[in-house]
Image (cartoon, rainbow, N blue to C red; front, side, top):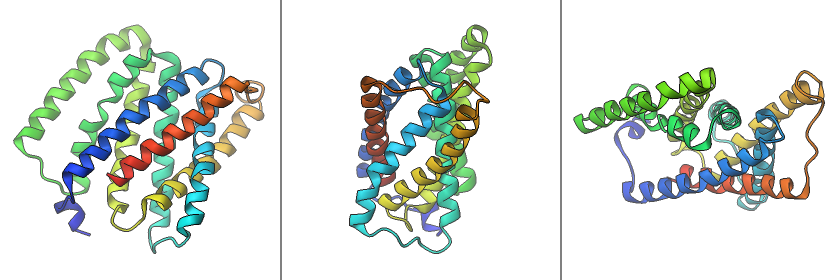
Length: 241
């Protein structure tokens, strides 16, 4: 397993796939922002993972990816829940912040990921990386300071999302040599769907927040499907990277 810390296979291909994934994911954010006008972050996140689970199921069946590698199930579940946490907090940020502001603060995630990779995976931090981290952190502070003054604690929501996403990426790297992309995507989204279904029933249908789930119009259903497609494609590209 030390290979994970010292070896990166096909870095050019990985960078290309990661770049494509990061280009697709803003489409997910747009659909979530639209749905968030009438639905809460928990509800929007539930639909996002539910659709992804449904979309991934045929691929799991065709690939026969039912056999879970020994010792990876719990880690895969944690990975899925971290992604769900990141998504809930980011969708909450979209409800309270302008999209550009939320995304700009969330972009602290690569900085957090770089530091965590050094601590948890043993990756070496060279001078260029350290310089980039310091510059990026300074940029995040510049963006965050006026945001806190204008939006209050809501400006911290994208940072919590960024931390959860960085931990999700760490576990994704850890599992990449043992678990196929199809199974990793499916089990992560399935775990998130189950947990979010329980929370949505408790907080939304149960009346703790609001008076029930928001009825969806045909337009909103198309946004839900678009959100699920963008999530499935974007995160599949990230896993393959």
